[in-house]
Image (cartoon, rainbow, N blue to C red):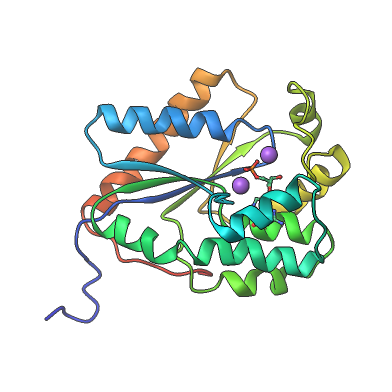
Length: 216
Ligand code: DGP
Ligand code: NA
Ligand code: NA
């Protein structure tokens, strides 16, 4: 029987989330982190939200490509549902010792939808009960600099004025636990900082850190 107040739990993987504006470089930094952790012998998987492979994910993908139109609230709930449909798999992976590097999570959900003018508390509500990340890293770049990076891909949200509002929403959403990395540094320097930041988190979870749910 576990003692109440004994906060240790079994060894587990870490839930590490990278957030940032479109074109901040998250995706390539995530894949480099995966290679690094694999080389060190850690069990690790690369995840991303939206996960476009599920039924819900295909609806999201079509919305992002401007091939369908949905009410702002409805698409918000679909993004959230897309995270909920992966929740149990996420928890079992973590319990089995696999670290997950996740490209976007609930913070994107709130930042992008509240940038449209939806109430932030309303946006947070459907995310409550999802697993809270052990670490959130924000790849910081100004909307202007992000827009200069080889141009946007043409998806719905990839417009400067909108990204400016997303940046403001992220600012309101972030707290002192977030690690902020300057995403305008050379790729290798960003990666170096990320490696240092995540290792401590991976080790803490390995030693047994209790799960927490959003929003805490
Ligand atoms: P990505 O596949 O990371 O490029 O994400 C696709 C776009 O969707 C990107 O502009 C960010 C946005 N996005 C990601 N997650 C959410 C979410 O939960 N809600 C909303 N409204 N937008 C999101
Ligand atoms: Na994108
Ligand atoms: Na995403």
